[in-house]
Amino acid sequence: MLGTVEKKFSLQAADRKVEMARSSAIEWSTLSRRTIVFRCLAAVAATLAASIKEAAAKATQAAASYQDTPKDVQRCDNCSLFQPPNSCLLVEGTISPSGWCKFWIKKTS
Image (cartoon, rainbow, N blue to C red; front, side, top):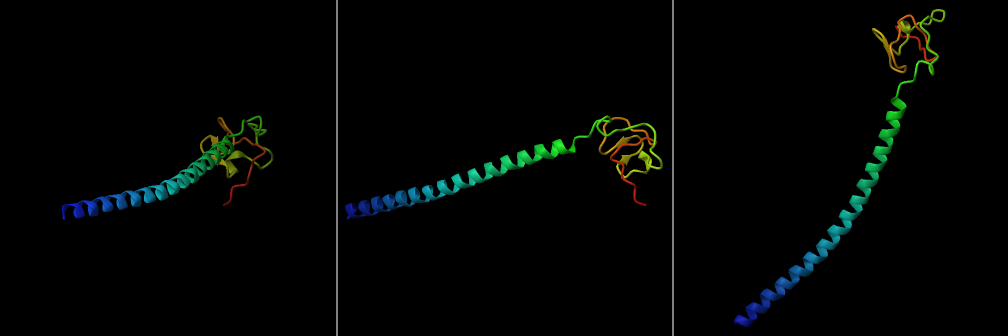
């Protein structure tokens, strides 16, 4: 009787090991694919973030053809990119409200 019980437990233990081995193999392959996908997505996101940061960099005053005087009625203080009291969304440095650059966009009312 004792031998039959021992055999039954050893068969159950063997079945559990086989089942665990199968489930581990399935989980490993799924985890591996996920890891690859997530790492690829992270690399793409990092690349996009770097390019967005470069695009968000402000232009120099020389590159924007900035001048401290207005061009006709075009002045920084009536430009939609001007940030009072003396900055701009696209041009770096101190910006005069009566200045002008080639990025001037009329402020909407």
